Length: 180
Image (cartoon, rainbow, N blue to C red; front, top):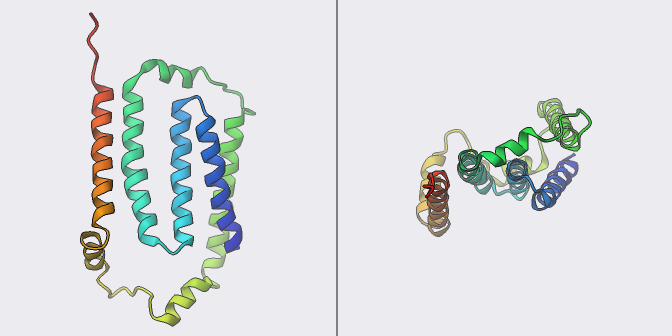
């Protein structure tokens, strides 16, 4: 099942990325970008990069993508009119894409809920055997702080500059232009 979930995340990431670059509607492209970022975070989990996956979700999904959405919503009313004039039929392609993604996430959730109490994944067992598992008594906040301020200082600063640029871009897009 782990292989199926991995290929599911990989297919979702690649497929959504291909749809993202071919999409003409900016609002739908932003929501596809949301799916791509979550899928990449899932792939980071399979690479045992938990910190990078959580950082991906917190910074890119929680910060940058929300700023992009706000900038889009505040920027141009004509772009928002394109959303209302889209197809409203039940059998439209975006509805089926959403149903397919929702059904796949539901299947993963149900499978995980069923298998969660009976058997743990092999990588968790291997981590316990090697003694590298994190225990509730470990001070992980202190370790994360030390890692951010020592080993990951440069990526942390790059992300902070990226967030500042996104904020400046959002402020610039929301600024009203004066008409002559």
